[in-house]
Image (cartoon, rainbow, N blue to C red; front, side):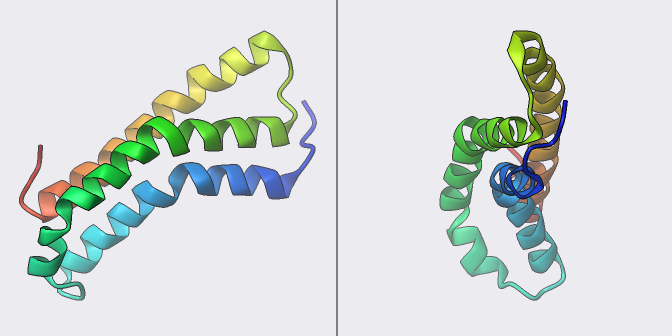
Length: 108
């Protein structure tokens, strides 16, 4: 496997992780009193919708973009990438979303 485009690899990772990391950063801002709790809590439904969209759409699309840019070829290569990348992405997504939910008083 030869990386065809480092830039594409970074773009794919960014697409996959931008929303979960943003949720984690927002949780840190609320915990430290930088972002107002009441206004942030009022938008919790919108944040939840964005998080679900990232789980089912942006994450897989970002993984595919990163895989194509990394030069993954063949069915076994894609299968191996998805077997490794999807659980790792889901774990990172869960930690970030659970952190935001816990901070805003809505753990699940």
